[in-house]
Length: 280
Image (cartoon, rainbow, N blue to C red):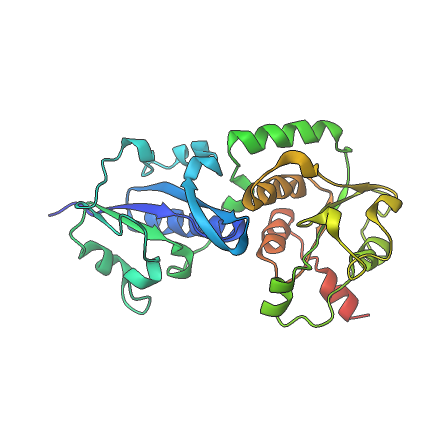
């Protein structure tokens, strides 16, 4: 009997979609006894935030987490090439390689390849659970961990956290015609401990205008921001924000944001500022 192929995952798109890829890949390989590895992660194109490019997986994620899985193989120990690897250049997403309506294990085993590159795997394989809460255990690369530990020194022991989405592509995609102002969230969202400082996670936060704020952030008391001089890729900055959010006392974000979904999962909460203000 031929050995089944080794599955190689290229995580794709935004940070949380990449975390979905990781969770789906681990669960599928555990359930069906495949050896697996992770090759590439995605960084966002700074000139077009709707496009991504590949980077080595360990440039975004810490691979130490995977060592506890007996069927994990470090990517550097594999001998992949165009001949022995299906989708070697990862030009096709997993949904383009396999039919989601048919038995996935049978399709994979029929390929007759030693390795298979699976890009954006979570969109193909959705029948899985997460009893370990893997999202809470995933760690960023050493660079982001170092930045986080430096920030931890300056962060207060207890703080609240707002993940704010205001971008036009986000509003257009979800047909949000009257987005909640950040001012309203800062002033009126009912955090359990109102006196705690508030960390705000948002893209280009220093450039927010009157559509989002009634006055500059510098005029608010007890607001915490990360340094804009860090020169991080969008996904690196997101992972730093994610780490800060995991250690907050309470978080709130938009219900359509996968980033908010995962932070709420880590906190076992269900806090959405848009729902709160819509109900008022």
